[in-house]
Amino acid sequence: MSKKIKSILIDLSGTLHIDDTAIPGAVDALKRLRKSNTVIKFVTNTTKESKNTLHKRLIKLGFDIKKEEIFSSLAAAREVVKTRKLNPLLLIDDAAIEDFEDLVKSETSQNAVLVGLAPEKFNYKYLNDAFRLLLDGAPLIAIHEGRFYKRPDGLALGPGAFVKGLEYSSNVKAEVVGKPTSEFFIAALDSTMPEEAIMIGDDVKDDIAGAQAVGIKGFLVKTGKYREGDEKTINPTPTNVCDSFTQAVDLILKEFV
Figure 1 (cartoon, one colour):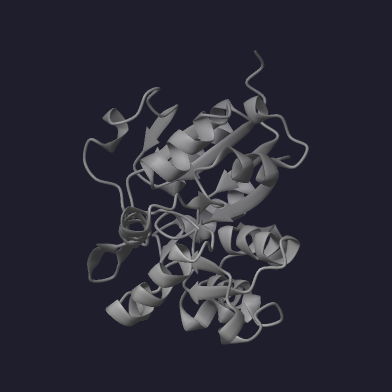
Figure 2 (tube, helix red, strand yellow; figure 1 turned 135 degrees about the vertical axis):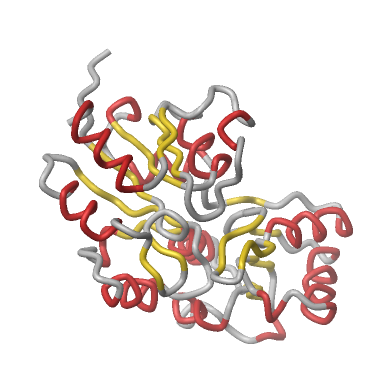
């Protein structure tokens, strides 16, 4: 099998930046990677802000990223809502509502529950509203089931705990649309074959195991949400484990492109 790589998928939060701080060396490393003859796409489960807001944040941090290069689970969720003509209760952060404003109708006719990262809405009232909709037959759509994520003040609970709680109480299985689903990674690759791609990320389950399940090489970075020994918790283990995005780029440029 040829080692030649044509496409590189890159996680954002925890891999290139943490909130408003770029990971040291990541901006310059991305510039070097862009000089290779590869297609670069940024795949993210970030749901706490709209695509426009996320793109502005990344540009402000100094990253050379085009908005159309961002492939997000929010966009995948929007497509589900649009295609099925759903009117969901949105358990997502207010900063991400922009991506759904033209699709959401009256609150009195809600027929689905859409869950992302929404710290201000993970309270009894909102969760109980969601629970009642699910009991009435509404589908439960999880933008992703992230266990936790990295903030400047430390690790914080992701939406996965609340998705699982709703599943338990309502006896409704969630449909997941973001990482680590195979559909998400295949869509992100577009026409590239999985064996010709690399995924770089800090989440051993959602980024690395998800990518490797479809044949993409997984490069786990020890930044963001990485915890010591994460690489030993999945089978197969990551293709490579790197201290940072910078080290991952160095290895890719040396051995794969």
